[in-house]
View 1 (cartoon, rainbow, N blue to C red):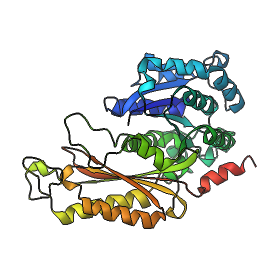
View 2 (view 1 turned 90 degrees about the vertical axis):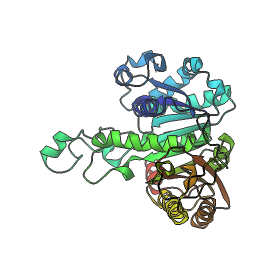
View 3 (view 1 turned 180 degrees about the horizontal axis):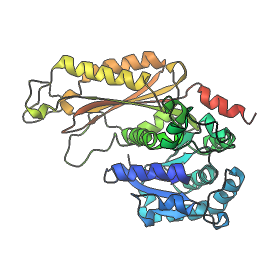
View 4 (view 1 turned 45 degrees about the horizontal axis):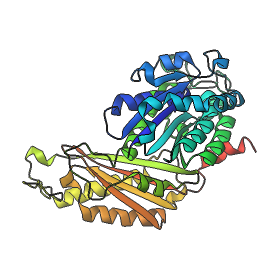
Length: 382
C-alpha cells in the first residue's frame, strides 16, 4: 500500500527521517514529511531534504514548547491547514493511508497530531493511523533519579529527558487520537528498554525497531516491478479491516529468521511460485522456519503489550524467498494464530522476496484488552 508518513515533533521527525533513510526508494513509501516548532530538531534530520522539513508555529519562537500540551493544541488548531498544504508537493491524494508518527509525551507534536489527523481525514478518503511513542516513567522523575548507580555509566549514555508532564500529555493525546484516527499503534518505550539503559542511550535502537515494524507492515503488499506477485496480495483494505476504523489500539509483532537462498545452488527444493527452474527447499526446513517466525512475532516483544495474547482481529503476513513460503505451513500457522488470539477474524497475506535471505512474519492484532502501560497513563488524568 502507498503510505504517506508525517513525523510530528522531535520523536516523530526522527522516525520519519529514519524511514526516509532506510526505505526512501521503496514503493510503499509514497511521501514523507517532518513538522516541528523546534528549528534545531528539524535541522538535525539527515535524510529528509529541506523541502520535506517544515517549521510551524511562529508563536513558539523556533523552540520547543516545554511540555505545554495546551499550547501545542492551540498551534495544531491554528496550523493544521497550513501543514496539509505543506505536503502537497508529494501528491498526498495518491496515498492509500497516512501515518502520523509522534512522541505522545511531548507538546508540539502531540498537541498538533489530533488537529492534523482531523484535517487529513477531511481532505482525503484514505485512513489516518497514528504511531505514538509512550513515555517511560523515569521521564517524570526529578533530574538525578534517572539511570544506574555510578557516574561512569551516566556520563557514557545520554540521560532520559526530564519531562514532568509526559505521562499526562500521553494519556490526553491517546484519547484525542483515538477519536480522530482509524487506529493507534502505541510503541511502549519502557518495555523495550534493556536493564540499566536510559531512554536517551536507547533512542537510536528503539527508533530502528519502530521503523522496522512500520516498514514490515505497510511495505508487505508492495513488490518491485518484475518480481514475484504474492499469492495472497495484501492491500490497504486488508490492513483497514484488521485494525478497524474506530480508533482502537493495535499492536505490531515482527520476527525474522535467516535462511539459505535457493539460488545459491544448495540441496533445498520446493518451488511454489512457479519459475522455469523451480528452486528446491527442504519441506521440513521451510515448515520449521515459518512456524518459528510466526510464534516469535506473536509471543515476542510487540510494539505494545497484548494482554493474554488475545485480539478481536488479527492479520498475518509471511515473507521471504518464494521457495520457502510453504503454503501448508502458513495455513497451519494461521490456524495456530486463531487459537492463540481467540480471534474469529484472521486475515493473511504473503510477501515474496526474490533473492531474500530470511523468512519473516508480521502479526497485527487489534481490538485488544487495554495494555497495563496504557492503563497506567490513563490513571494520571483520572
